[in-house]
Length: 549
Figure 1: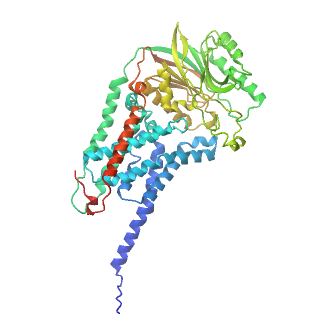
Figure 2 (figure 1 turned 60 degrees about the vertical axis):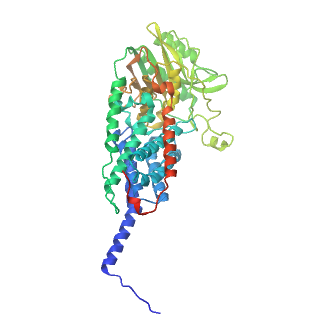
Figure 3 (figure 1 turned 90 degrees about the vertical axis):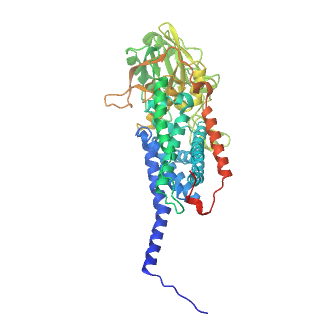
């Protein structure tokens, strides 16, 4: 038996070294660079950085990498980890409440997107071979799944924070589109453009071993032109000068310290400081006054209520309608509420009780199974959620304007604002208690959700935060006024007057009438694309790099 030994030449050594380097780059450097881009662009596109254009390209590298055929496990792990880091940085202000909770929420939120990245990994090899019709179906299916995932996050048991559309909160030319599709339409468009651009760049980087392939895809300019088209339709469709009623509203920011266990002496001091600021604000020129969520430490209805003191102050000092956020009771159940005191001091018989509560902040979900949580979060019995969309009739110059309150992060839920408009609201009042979150970009992110709700329903929003962001947004989603101090900061203790234009005869938008119809359409597009993927399984022949245009 003869043995033949093959000696490695220098050229063989060089080729082996190059192959090892290429494998190293594909396995580690490529995902690391993509993750860095994902985190940077996925954070910088949102408030308070507001580089909105980055949202249109922050998924492009994932598409390019998927076209190179990475392992599914490595692809999904890189996507989940980078998205978890992105969410942690977006929610970094939440660490003032709980760092561990912030890490947990970031991990969970990133988990919502794993299914989308799995579909992307499966879809891109197909899109490189399909003709234009099926490619468009793929783009629509991927964008449809993204919308479905965002919609799932807006359910009461989830966290609806920062959908992709939120990145465009300062781009009113695009926001008019939401009055038809809801914010879902903007997210759909952003994802579509990302995937189209990613496929186009992949095509430019592809070398065909079989035959030349078309380098320029016809859908690329179509996707880019769609942005301009939607912006033009938005400008034509809803930015006219509506007949409006001008109402001057005095907003009070008490900026009280955030404490978990208020002592009785501090509670008395808090009341004194609040009425001191409110009395100064009563001298400002205004038709109404608004207080934020949790303005006073004692309830305004039920046991130990101080509503009589507030009524007397309104009748003697303010002499104008007051919208006040505060806790109270319905029978024996504690609620987070907004109250209306009329100009004569009389408290309106109705109140608005917050409909979606913050888990572990206002109530403990699955309380019987999670009794140990009470040792960490002492909440007593917690709050009870309200059931109805209350609309207050607030008097202004002999007529009554229907005002719908939303409390805290309720303006993140599109369905709540829509139900309030269907109940008759002409304007939203958002009362929020955001002292917990420091003086970072949390208040800006929160305010951006109010912009989406205003544009979707064509209703203005005025907001009063305990520390800021306080101001108003018109019915087109344009930010009109924001209260700031001498330093230009939204975070301060003080008051100010805004002049809100409330449409005299606002109409229901398509979105308000028909709700989340676009989510249903996106879901159908996703299932349609899933069927196509099932119908055309991946081939392993030499035509992997060819396709029919």
